[in-house]
Image (tube, rainbow, N blue to C red; front, side, top):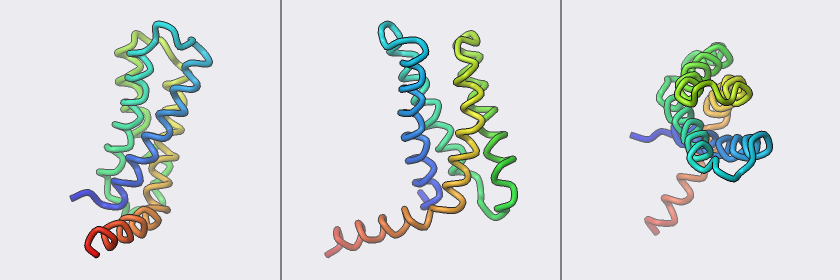
Length: 123
């Protein structure tokens, strides 16, 4: 079942993936980097998905948990690109924290929106 935490973290991962694309285009340019840009966005989406799977019972662990998952997931992409973007790797750790924080503290907003949308479909 897709929880509101999962939805929130996937949305955050998608949005932060777009921010990553802007940063990569600024650093490397757009031309010839299409697959790299897609991979960067997908990495952030995947980060959101994985963070959404984690249970949020321990709110005090948000920073450590987000940083650890961000590190692990960003490291996989960083290694696969032959260490091409160290800035993107470092930012991935911060994005892990942001995604986990949003999913832990603000998933109720996505839940309310989902309920309104579901109610309108059932009407």
